Image (tube, helix red, strand yellow):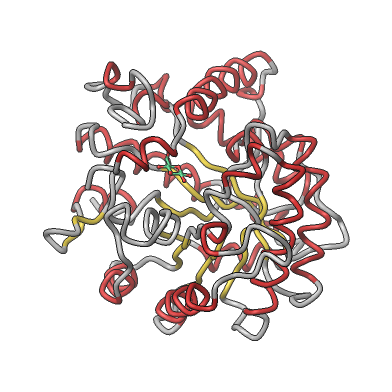
Length: 365
Ligand code: BGC
């Protein structure tokens, strides 16, 4: 389903261009600092080091996951063409995935002034989604997605986000431990690395007051860019944290034809052939992320990766396969972006998976 005019408007072009810019900068930084030359040892050696925290086991439970995007993160569920249905959770479970990430736009369903009360009917809808996942044995992640104001105006947005998390955390405090919280999708714009870093202790405390043991997922700034991991400092007193990053490189390939990216029509026809250069770029990016994880004793969750349906299916499938396998080789859990919309792995109308994408994700020939 094509994004609505409102959706296109909301996904501000300037923001996406910034992400595209970050791709170029990150690529040159990795080369300049010689990260590509880092030797990280075999996957087995890495796993042995990583077992220092139980967050590693919780990360393993995430395993292979699917983002149920463009539903509860739309301005109103359904506005972007997807209304969650029980069959989607069943399809994900039956296909062999371990987890779902459910992006949620709480800010559209809460007061604008203190105490920023979340609408009970919206809580009920999220409760339903969580239950759909957990009752099928899937791990569920709920996050805060498209909280636009915090990126524009952190001074106003941070206290509101703290208030939202106090409510969300208290509401789900009795849920099984297979429900994980993710503090904020893709900090960017005015929510710089420094401001994001400064907000993390208060946000984490808002969760820990009612959920001392809940798994919490936190990502770096600049759209959860792995190149910004070095700016992320997490409290050593809190072991039950998983660190997330997103991967959409090469951006002109994954975002070709995106209504949200100005001039991305020019990228149509960009292919990904899995050349040695293309694969080396991917390995270098992931090696740098893995090196950070090892130094900081935190497991990594690749919370989003995907290529739009405008790209040809052969390229999409080979890129998806390569990214998923390189993630797994380094012990990263992952979640594909996304289930049934413009990056979709599942065809909602045909009620079936795009076979090449599912095979790529699940490592089937
Ligand atoms: C955003 C989506 C977007 C996707 C790929 C996500 O984090 O929330 O709106 O389609 O990234 O760009």
